Image (cartoon, rainbow, N blue to C red):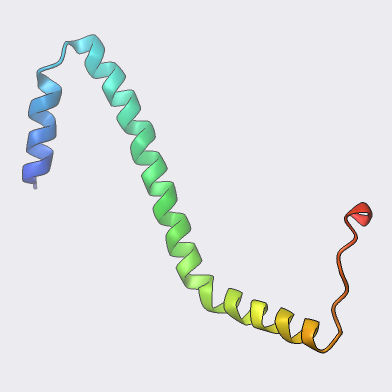
Length: 76
């Protein structure tokens, strides 16, 4: 099913010379892939956000109780 936005994009695309269409298509492929990757990261982060908050709270508790020690970067 073609939306109004899709129809508009196709019409704009068709006004371009073929060589330019190829360049635009390549840019669009990359752009769409980047958007899909961002969506995956956002979905992944939203699924783990509660766990990250719990880990942060645990770390704060351990710091307050004196159980945490500063990280020595030279030991990495």
